[in-house]
Image: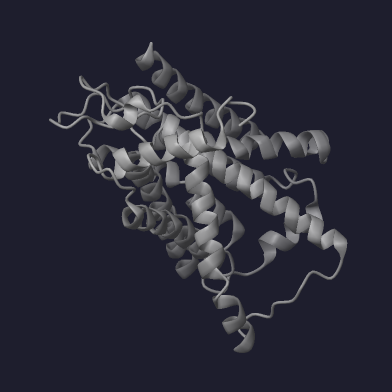
Length: 321
């Protein structure tokens, strides 16, 4: 509130009006049920891929799960094209494909080179564990990747406000209805409401977190009682701080990701999330084993990911200029 010069009541009123005009145009009342359905859908869309990933990581190899999961950028582009009846654009398709190839190069090339991990002992343990059901794990990861790509596209279509400042990524849609990100001749009511940047996305992120807390905890005592999984309180303060740090970083990542989905759309955002692989590589290079992490495949893969994102970013901003 201090950064936006808005009072709490003004922010709440703006959010209420924007969500009402977006989910229930023309209605004077806040659409509580529709908002609940939207939050439920978003929660399922985030939770299901994550659960499938955790299930797959115990069945398939770390390399396969990592590589297959990061193809969600490719699926996000395919789903976007099909859902909005877009034309296949060679530049965007090539960028998304190259980003996926870059991930494969980093994951598999770095693992087979022998010198691409800052901790060889950990690497040896991680990649020497024999997968118990690699085919099942890979299939689960593939489903998770497709589901996550679908979630990104559907978030932009149904959850993001029409007034989110996305550039013209879908202006070529041959439809009578305005496409996501296109300029309307007559602004809708929600477009005339100015919200502080990221406020709506943060509200949805908080709603997803609250709903997850309310629902997911139910399975904890059930799994504990049936001895499917043993749960216990953290043993010391250090563990508590680590968990708190993970939770805080997860909140930052999820909130930022939701904001970018509204502003950049699923294609650029999904490819942009692959930059985390580049950041991990740089972090390992600076704080890990240094030059021992350098391999030809890791350098090529990271360079390709950065180049692919740069192409999409240039394409996005050039459309808006």
